[in-house]
Image 1 (cartoon, helix red, strand yellow):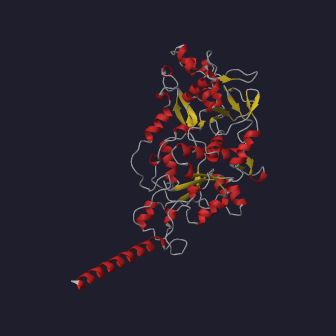
Image 2: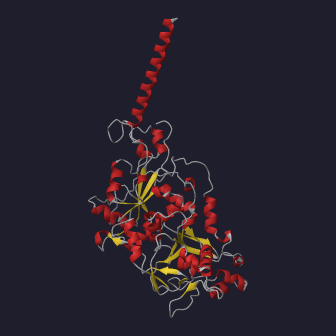
Image 3: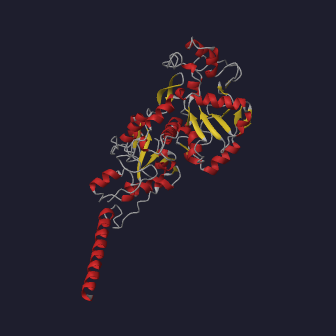
Length: 469
């Protein structure tokens, strides 16, 4: 009896030792051949998500040295055994995007391994309110086409650079991409801005490539796989009319809300109660103080200090932008207001709903004059027109600088109305706050309807380890 008992315990011990050895061999096979060459199993916990949203060149280079740039996606790495890839890289990939023209891509160069996000891919024309509007948030299919082409998945930290000496236009494209991604559900910890772009990269002693070939693997990831649409980051024409009315009717709301118009203190017309900034980059500076280099964002303390000392106009009075008030930024057509979104979301890290862009901005707003709407909607009643008109006699939603007149409608370079087509002849019957008049939000929310998990692996919060190796 005792002999059988000892044999049984010995058999169990051998089995446990065998299982332990098998497990150790499996772990070695998964992680021991990583780029570190150390033979140890890398920690799969994402690290890029721990940094601030505004990063410098040395931080990006560290991620590249860790093998994260354009690393295989989790599903693809798992299928191949992942024997030559650090598991941490698979779950914490990096893709560098740059808003560049094809000419600048080779003439000015780019960070090696970066991929090009076209400067014509930051916005699109979409129906909203009573008419088609230009320079609006890209829709879901457009965003999916971009992120899939550039190899972005749920485990990807997206670093947005910009070409050398890109000026304000490059800065606006960089910040619009940031806003586009945030609106479509990418979390702040997965969207980074390389402060100063390629100029900062080169100033740090790193080289740029003029190779025209972009080397990356496309993904099958969709914005539908993100947690939710950040709808509070964007205001529609109806939202703006409603909010403007609220502040006019209750001036105490100015203690809680601020509207930022970034086109200059002489801007006319402008939305009633909007604070007018001298320019869109008043809180930024140039890299190393060099006017030939890209703009750079300040750190949080510097930004708060600049907001407290650099005045803007409230009518004719000097006031200061608050870092804590709920803020809606606007400009001519969404572009130059986009750095303001970055300031509040990426640097100040205000709560969701405390910063938004009105992407229609003046190019949309100025088409909603009483005269223009009356000419376009001959069957509409005066009451219906007044609900939409920015210069309604009962509640003037727009202010003018001295010596200017109400615009009939915004014109293009050839003198044609930029309103390409009117949605429907009886649409003024619906009030601005009606959900059916916020067509962009309605369409985008429908597109984000959950459809299951992504085939390219991971989640937007950093991903979870794939099963097995």
